[in-house]
Length: 462
Image (cartoon, rainbow, N blue to C red; front, side, top):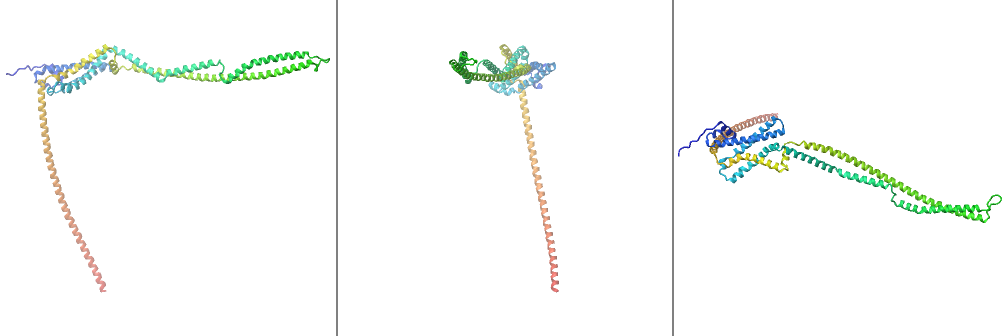
């Protein structure tokens, strides 16, 4: 079979797309069968970059609002997503992966990358969602904000127990009203009831005794008018009429005494009734004053608590309404109750997810290209060369180590020999010094003996 002729021409645009795909341009030039494949891969990366930059621009607009921040944030986000996508694809060795089963491909390579793809798709689609569903998000945020601060107000009122204080106020007012009504009634004490009963019982008796006293007084006066008078105008005390008069006067005096005793008894009952009423009224007034104090205290507490609740609720309302950042919009849209909004949002997310995982899926499931095979071969050759170079370097290092060890051993032996010679010299010098010292000591001893001998001879001769 003859050699197959392949058109190896490429355009500048293709070369640019190869560079964008992150592959080795110099090697792709040698693989004409892969020109279009890696051009499409680069174009897919360009598309991903544009989508990410477009969505990042919306996020930048939310954060900053100016065109400079919008463009800068869009570029940064687009480049970040592009870099991650490129690394997700380039870290797959197609020659090695092609030897694995589909299940292992998905388990080992696809699942970790799809997790990252989900994160990228989520953060790519969110800014676009915030722009497309702006009205729905703002409306739901208003509802959530109102619900939040009203719930906070209810919980604050419950915490401060304003309702309990209001119930206490009603109880105090009710007791005060009951005490005010009781002021118009009589005391319910045993002493008052006994005094009232005795007063009511003895008052008719007093009236009877008063009537009897008046009757006896009339009888006395009549009897007094019937007593005869002598020539001097004096009553005749020996007459029967005078004796009748004396009897009537005694009866009158007895009636007066009975009336006065009964009147005194009734007045005592009246005093007890009056004292009990005054005591009762004073006690009621004290209790009413106490209830007034409790009522005023409760009213002041309710007013203070309501003012505190109003201030804190107003602060909470302003704070909640000020929460309009990216995270708040994200959570509001994530929990939006409208089915249509959720369907469209997830549809956009799935579109971005497909764009994110498509390059990885194509690289993972496609057969190795001419470029992959050559690149794998070059990698293996380079690895072999590097391993050989490493082995040579290791061998050279080992030889150097051995030479250094021999040199070190020689130096050690030389040092030991030098030390031995120095020791022998020092030992010889030490021996000579000892011999000189011994000779000196011997000479000194001879001189001492000679001197002693001469002195002894002189003594004996004298």
